[in-house]
Length: 181
Image (cartoon, rainbow, N blue to C red):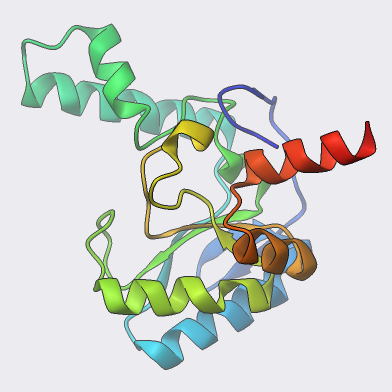
């Protein structure tokens, strides 16, 4: 698990490219199949992002901080960082560095995809081993607000279980740790 509570150094996964986006090579076929299924729902579904290095994530996060400060000059850098953390992770806290996370949507803007299409894509994700990583109403668990386009590969069996029981990755891992204790 990679998040703000589990900061991780660069992971350097073996990468493969799917439609111009790098992902962990172990999940490339799953990504291709998931994308094809999503495109059967809406032909404009496309991959936006996959693997990101820690350095790239740091630059991206910092650019968001600067954008927020430019949009609202009354924000301090600390306040802007807090705001940005509701939709982006600081370096070392983004699961994109695992190569197991993809952003996929019909548009290139967060939460602006047709909600009907987004729900259909989210419903079929577990068949390909993916879960919607930041579902509605779960920010207290994930630390991130709802994102209609961020999917995480967890494997088919885990994805089906997590979806059936409405669990985030944090809740699922806690459940597994509790079971194994």
